[in-house]
Image (cartoon, rainbow, N blue to C red; front, side):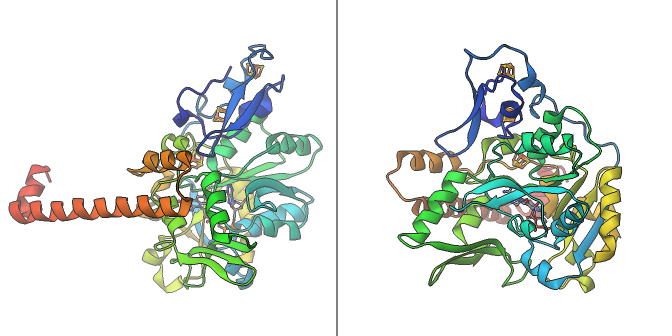
Length: 396
Ligand SMILES: Cc1cc2nc3c(=O)[nH]c(=O)nc-3n(C[C@H](O)[C@H](O)[C@H](O)COP(=O)(O)OP(=O)(O)OC[C@H]3O[C@@H](n4cnc5c(N)ncnc54)[C@H](O)[C@@H]3O)c2cc1C
Ligand code: SF4
Ligand code: SF4
Ligand code: SF4
C-alpha cells in the first residue's frame, strides 16, 4: 500500500485514493495546505493497486520523437483577451463540446478555492478559462472521467502534467474517446497560502473577481488582479505583486514539484499547451503582446484535434529548436528548486503568529537582499581576478 515517507514523492494527483477498491485512502491536508494520501490500514487488503497507478512509481518514458510545435492564437480577439495566452484551450474545448463531449478543467468555487469540475456546454467553459496559480482540488474527477468514457462520451481532461499522468495511470487502459491536454508547468503553490492571502486582502469585504493573467499592461507583463465590491484589492504585474513573486520564486511550492514525475512530456498527454514566449525573439513582427499559445502535439489523437480547429486560429508551425532554446520553457525539462527560505516561511505560517502577506513580503525581501549581496560579491571577485582568469578557472 501507498505510504508517503518523503513529501517530494507525491504530487497529490489522487490516483491512488480514487483507484482503491476498498475506498480506504483519504487525501488529508498537511500544515502547509497540500493534500497527501492516508491509508486506513485496517481496511486495506494489500491488493497493490494504489502503487500501480502512482506516477512517482510508474513513470512514462520520455517520447522518442520531439513533438510537432505550433505558435497559435485564436482569431477571436475578445476570447484571446480573456485567456492566459492565445486562447488555445477554449478553441480545443469548444470543439469537444460541439461533438457532444465533456470537458474537465480547474475553476474557482464560491470561496475562490481552485477545484476541478466539468462542463457540458460552451458557456460552462468560461470558468476553466485562465490559469489559476494554485494547486487544484481534484475531488472525484478521475472516477467521473471514467464514468463518462464508459458511457461512450468524448472527454477532454485538462490539468497539470502530473494530474494527467495520474488520470492515465488510474484508467489503466486507453480510451478512444479521451483527449488529455496538459501545460508546461512551473509548479503549483499551496492552497492554504492562497486562501490566507485572499482573506487578508478582503478583510470584512467580499471578492468580486480574480485574474492571475491580467493583460492590462500587456501579455508579457501579465499580473494578478483581485477586485472587491468597491475597490481594486491587488493589481500588479508578476514582477511586483507579492503573491506572483512567491509563486515564481518557488517560496510557496509543493515539495513534489521539485521532483516532478511528469516533466519532459512524461504525462502521456495528447497535447501540451503553454505561453509561446519565444515568439517575440523569433518572429517579433507577428507579436502584438496580446497573447500567443504554444501547442506541442504529442500523439496522433492530439494532432488530429489540433488540425480540426486550426482554421479558427492564426497558426504557424515552428522548429522545435525554438521551443528548446526559449529559456522560459525550462520547466519542460527542469524541476524548480526550493526558494532558499521556503521552509522558514512555512514554519512561520504554521506558528500562526504573523500574517501571510507580512511573511510573504519578509521572505521575498530576504531572498532578494541575499541575491544582491551574492551578486555584488561576485562582481568584486570578478574585478579582482578579471573575467579572463575566472573563465580559465571554469575551464571555458
Ligand atoms: C500552475 C500553472 C503553472 C504554469 N506554468 C507555466 C510555465 O511555466 N510556462 C508556460 O509557458 N505556461 C505555464 N502555464 C500555462 C499557461 O499559464 C497557460 O495556461 C497556457 O498557456 C494556456 O493558455 P490558453 O490561453 O490556451 O488557455 P487558458 O484559457 O488560459 O486555459 C486554462 C487552462 O488551464 C487549466 N488550469 C488553470 N489553472 C489550473 C490549475 N491550477 N490546475 C490545473 N489546471 C489548471 C484550465 O483547466 C484550462 O484547461 C502554467 C499554468 C498553470 C495553471
Ligand atoms: S493496497 Fe489496495 S486496498 Fe490497500 S490501500 Fe492500496 S489500493 Fe487500497
Ligand atoms: S502521487 Fe498521486 S498516486 Fe502517488 S501517492 Fe501521491 S496522490 Fe497517490
Ligand atoms: S511541477 Fe510537476 S509535480 Fe508540480 S504540479 Fe506541475 S506537473 Fe505536478
